[in-house]
Length: 309
Image (cartoon, rainbow, N blue to C red; front, side, top):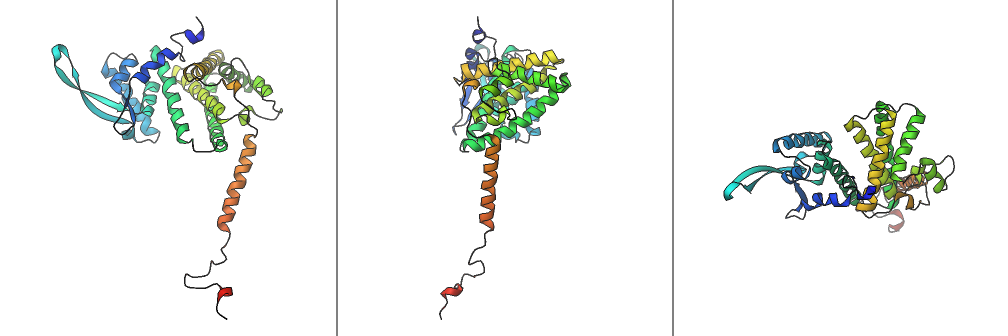
């Protein structure tokens, strides 16, 4: 049985169905998940245990600056109990983002939780990208490149606490993530395949789709190392590699996407886009500052060259 056929593998398509199956559509064409149904899907038997996870997720939502009421809606439902009797129970309607926060705070020992973390993280990120879909590709690349840089900084700090100390250690650690995501390619292999010069960085020569995949890899590696309390260089390297593999499986098998090594390399680098964007901003600023020929003319005044002689 290969990695793609492993029912416990985070990218296994057959396991994603439970989260899609319990997704509901509201009257206003929105979407939500029932906390009761999500608890069952994640393997929680006791509702009171799951309410603690919801509480932690609410706190995380508030801390991140989001309005809790936008993502967690307390409701009550009638359920059928023994001999046809009905009983009212509490429930919470959850947004996709709320589900993401819940699975990040759920019991990592439950096998389905790891899948839920991947599923809702990807879905949440896809929605964010969809919301910015109106942006030109160049601006999406600039936005994502900055976000990848921020995530890599956070990942470096997390890896250092786990025992990845020297610059060489971190380079090896990064290579393990790339090898998982790119089917065995290290950073130098990606660099060579893209035909880059020695001074050029691979992240500066990725399109928005490839940058998004690397953002997700870095995000999930950072969270898993912290969540699982990973310690030691070898353990950190193995974790980063496993996360890269999981993201790769999800892209290819569950989303039907293109492997990152097969995505095209953009013609322009990030630095070229930054210079073009700076010129555009400067041109707009100069245009706004350009004085009008009639700046001093009041509404009832006629420009001097049009006055009666």
